[in-house]
Image (cartoon, rainbow, N blue to C red; front, side, top):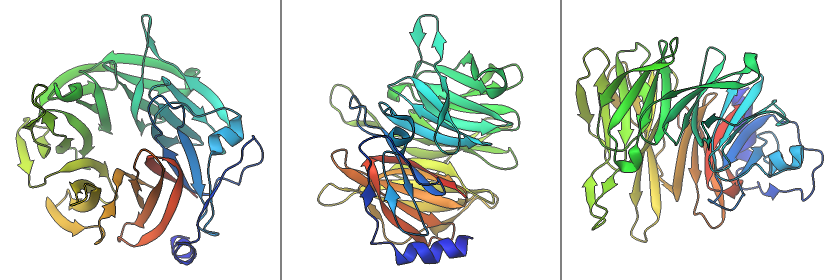
Length: 352
């Protein structure tokens, strides 16, 4: 199947263009690559597009076309849990649950007291979906109980999370003022430990053996001068004794789990004309060695990195115009370069 997709997609690399429908109506069968677009804050313009590898066509505004309503304000993440999709929309303070055709079947709106919570990153484990909330909480969504959410307090402004061996690891960014990872036992759903790391942790990956946790942090800045206070780092944390080792990467953006105990590492650099270019390294967590770049040519206007279903998605966006999504296989071959039909492509998801 993948070989067929590669041939069809290469033939259509330069042919794709966005097809948008102004009123709700029939949509294509959702087979291929879903593209989640972040949108701009306050603009209610988050969206989902579909790239068809067999035809090279890309269709935009699918969530609206299926449901007759906008996705909302700043889409953050998308995951598949069995025959359902979960989509977190941060400023709209909702996690949508849809079927595989994007029909909404549930809306998860978590509250703590009188405060509506703002979802960020998602992760799936044992049929449950876990979500970080900006207000300092980790949520567990159970579809067997009407999509109810149980909450536990973590650190300040949590961002990424990962699940390994019955524990959730949550990056507490503090918007640059926290430097911890919360360790949450999933049975009791309570924080049992805080690991100290570099300031402003953002994304996490745990190795297959449960021996190490990898933590990607971002730069922080002095609020008085806007000089860099701490630089981004990739750190390897021993889960047996908490020992932290800095790995040799700079200008870090994000890390994501790949297949076969591999990790993808996005690093972004500004070019001479101040355009961000992104490169992706492949790191073997079994050997502890960098295997080189996934692809040779850096992506201009780099915005995002995600992995799903055997494909690596690299988004390019400029905030003012529709972006592009570059889709690679795990050998680094470009499967597709397609308009995202929306602002700031955030993540990709492959539907067979």
